[in-house]
Structure formats: C-alpha cells, structure tokens
Amino acid sequence: MKKACYLFFAIFSCITVFGVLPAGAQCAACTAAVETSSQGGSHATAGLNAGIMYLLAAPYLVVAVGGYIWYKKYRRRNVVLDLPNEKLNLN
Image: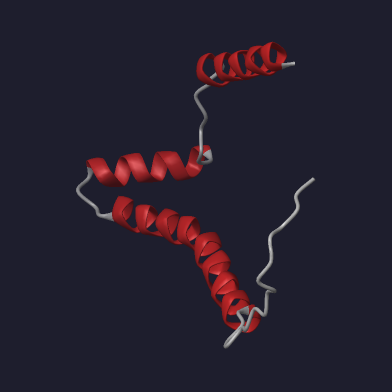
C-alpha cells in the first residue's frame, strides 16, 4: 500500500512538473493594447498589474475575515476541565 502511494505521488509530481503548457491569460485585444501602450511610454501596465493584485487578494481577504469571525464566535472563555485524578486505562 505504501509503495502504491509513493508511485501515485511520483506520477502525479511528474505530470505536474513536466505537463506545463504556456497559457495566454489575456484576450488578444487586451494583450495588444498593453504591449503597444507600454512601448509608447504609457503606464497602463501598472494599472493592469494593480487590477490583477486586487483580484488575487480578494479571496484571501474573504477567507481571513470569515476565519476571524469564526474564531471570535466559537472560542470559549473560562473553560474549566474537571477531570478526575485517576489513572487512565487505555486497553
């Protein structure tokens, strides 16, 4: 069972590493507009990069806020554990 798990992990890792394909993340019109404006001295690429960073940060921010609310709502205060002082039998 352990060997099968290692084999699966090795195959998955090889497919992940060597199966990389280049991806065009923008439509052709956006790519052409950014390339021509950056060659012309415009700063449109900075705005595009800022938009990408905004879209990247939004899901992490939502998860962080949800985690903070969950932590504040469900944490316990002044928990008293009254455990008897006897040996535990784990058999």
